[in-house]
Image (cartoon, rainbow, N blue to C red; front, side):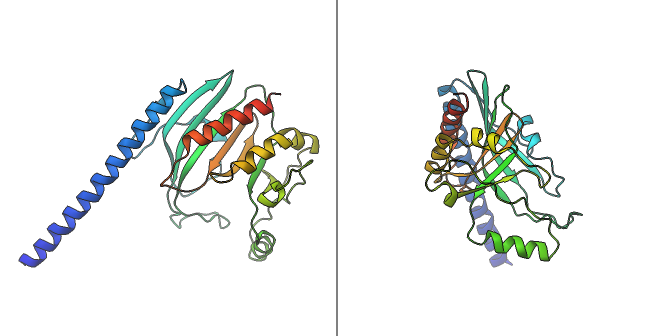
Length: 241
């Protein structure tokens, strides 16, 4: 009995130490984000440990019914010449297995997203993701087992070197057919170059109306708030030329 109690006490102490380390890391991270918010003349909202922080900008991008719980926290906001930026940490729980949507599969994920709002803009609704070597095969297999077909990749006018090899661009919905001219304006050669240069930390880009969502790579140890906000600012400057 004593051995059992000692073992349980040791486990409890180890868990307490790990929890303390985790809380300390998060506290220092939030202190750093508060400093970043002050540096850029913005605001910071940490949000609760469980419920997160409100982020209305995400509503256009998280509209699909899911069995998962999606929350945002550690929100840094700033404005630049009318453009609004909101950088936040995205959390998604693992699929509970109770989804009524047979086409939906997911896993837990945590990464940084930056939402850019340009009130005067009207972007074509696009999804831009890394080009996967087996994307054609995976599409065929998905169709065979009943998954809906994804929109075909779009041809990007004036594609710069490495862009087509790095990313693929699709309409946000199979029913949409973005105009080539609109795609060319949004993904100008200057924008393409910025995206390719940022591939080390950038995973994807989505557009909905007058909003753009930049998604960082899923690397919990490194949360590139500064890099993502800097990229977003550079893109806004290009889009407004």
